[in-house]
Amino acid sequence: ISGSFDVDVAVLSTLRLVGASATAITAGQAVLAAVAANALVRFALAFALSPPRFWLALFGATAVALAMGASIFLFVQSF
Image 1 (cartoon, rainbow, N blue to C red):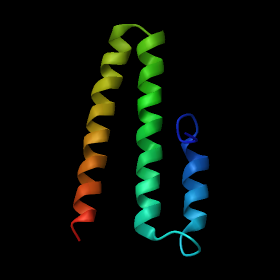
Image 2 (cartoon, helix red, strand yellow; image 1 turned 30 degrees about the vertical axis):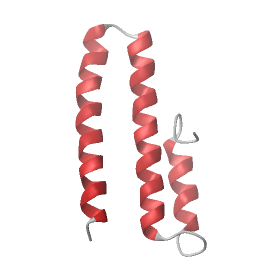
Image 3 (cartoon, rainbow, N blue to C red; image 1 turned 120 degrees about the vertical axis):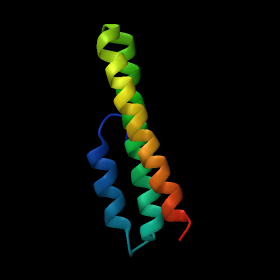
Image 4 (cartoon, rainbow, N blue to C red; image 1 turned 90 degrees about the vertical axis):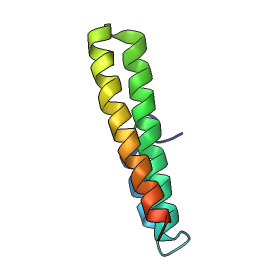
């Protein structure tokens, strides 16, 4: 939930836990989840509050970013 509006706080808080109470894999998954939540909330706000020419472009960029993040997530888990 904290990644919905400010992803920096979620990322920094998660990275502080690496080595103490979280593994690097778990922290990476948490960071990817926070970034994905942030992207989806930004798109939802743009969809609700802006003209279609803006949110359609944002949708394309968000879809590409989420697809790349998901592929990296799946690729890293295969190791």
